[in-house]
Length: 211
Image 1 (tube, rainbow, N blue to C red):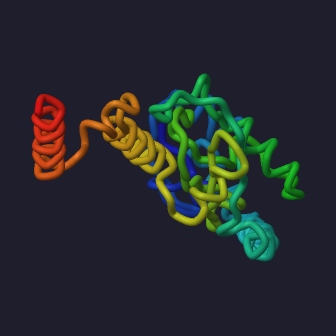
Image 2 (image 1 turned 180 degrees about the vertical axis):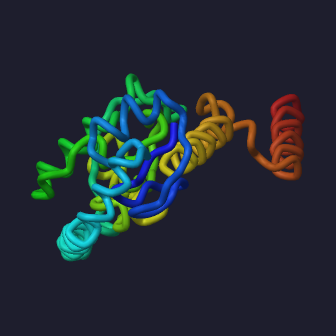
């Protein structure tokens, strides 16, 4: 379907561009959300007659979004979730979770359609998520998914929590393997030279007894 864009659409074009898109994309998204018009003669004339207002309104919205971007870009939100020792979540983090966390942090008026998350987050770690405040103003928000506030702080500092935990377990395993099983091992740990001397002394004592 041939359409006239009423705002910038990523990978398609900007205001006033006439482009071809799949019918379903036009009918289900672009047209009902007032992001485009069918490219027929009537709509072409309508667009040109209102082009100045459309561009002015877009510029105003862009300016407002740029103002908000200063408070949001680079912000990090923390989501505490249960996970296995391999870092896999028992569940996942969705767009709704991110929107709710932003709202709790005082960043309101962020709708689900504004958050660009290709797939739910299913593992611990830091994930950069794009938030579209305006078709021409996109910011990045850090999503810190951890099992506890302490682990979230470690991840914030750039520490791989799972790797650190694995190294700690390995160190504990090595330390346990090197620990003696009983006090007898301490006795057996007497140097050979000392054991030989002790044996000689014992033999000398026995000879003295016999004499």
